Length: 151
Image (tube, helix red, strand yellow):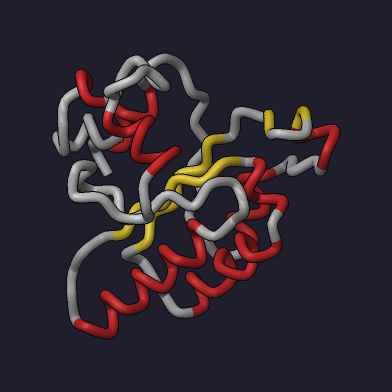
């Protein structure tokens, strides 16, 4: 997504996990903010803190009168965490139309298949029930980057 919005080139992103690749090193070894990864404010991992923090950023922007949009990328495994659902309820209640959440619904998480740990289906319907305009897209190579560039 960062590449699609021209924050920096693919040579700094891939191959994932390789020595010297800025994003993979930053995500694993550095603090929550780093000027070497423009557009990434923090990486919270799989504990479900990303959406609550993004929600706070979105409401602060609204209250400050800023027109910025906040993008939050979470995984389906994170949707097992209660803090994700609290933030998912909070954002529509406070009309945070400046918050865009992308859920990587790859159906796997650290403990196994999502359906075996906590089945989330129908995931898009849950988000819609909370007041989100959920769009469902099947991912194929590059699909997320191309679509996110149009957001």
